[in-house]
Length: 472
Image (tube, rainbow, N blue to C red; front, side, top):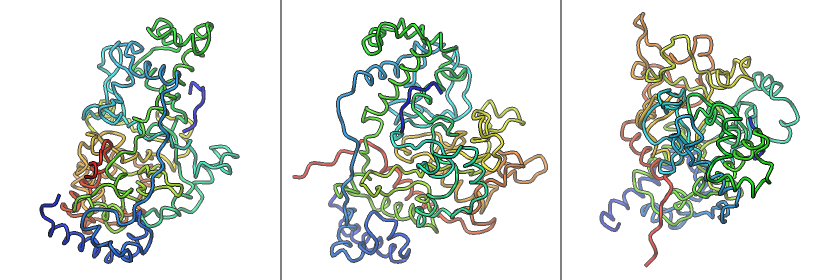
């Protein structure tokens, strides 16, 4: 993530052995697809002399070494950012800070199950989108159409968008993530629509939004900062004239917030049990192992097609996102007040909150793929907060196309109102080419209820804070 000063046990041992044999058989049945997608190199699962035994114990037969971000004391800039992050006095209500919606106790995401948080001067204005987590953004690339690389940075975003709409696209599956990574599709950026590229620009949005902190104006926020209990830290860091320019005051304040999010390891600890399992120092349960295989199976969950679960070639832990955008066609959420207007549609990249790509209609309805790290701690899912459990999310993937009556309401004409949160003209953008969205009505759903439970179990292993038991 770039920075810039811009304003924009032992019991049941026999059962474990049976499970281990079952896992190996599952890998055999799934073929080379799962073997290649495993953190264990292709072919190693079954050639490893102790693979069956280790898998029976829930261990990784081929541990890797993960390279985590270095940990150091926070800089003076980051310490100032921490004070600002937790300061509710910058809001119109005096009761809402960054941490109110991005709660440290809830993986820096929303503290409850509301589809959108309430803000404004009296905390009565409902937001328009679910609050995403601020965790694991230190490696988020800038917004681009296609990979964020030197070649693509030499042409304009409009040129990239035009090229992307004409370019062929590789199907995304858990076995073909390398090919899909080169697709000329929107990826990177912050917010659900990628309209910010720096963490300080991201912080500016809630600070001034009338639905959130509602700070009013740059001048008002700068005045509050000049009289904050930590105002002397501004002077020490930036000099006595820092408060002479409101624009500079707020820019430096938000840069400090960004430094806090980058430097504090709490925002990117990589301490889930899955991370420790990758290193061979933790066990997965039978259900988690089954869920892991389903997560990687293109004919089942195929979750790893978008939520990459493998370490990078240089050993950095997986982020469980490919940073790309998808139009999934989730159902409209009647609990959002903004949806009371039948003419209102949230089109993601096309607006209404992002304005520079409104004419790129091939991307209307696309939203950023979030990380799945700590996803089991959330109680609200998708950009519109329409679902409140992981089982509901998996049901959506299972039945969107095979049994849409279980997902969408019926319209006034009695027909199932599929993709009802998009205008008819944009429904062609919804993904119908990547598994499991290649299925048709009446086909068997790819996951059984038991398989959904196993995937949910695996997702629980992505929660940070796991502490390995000391060896005896």
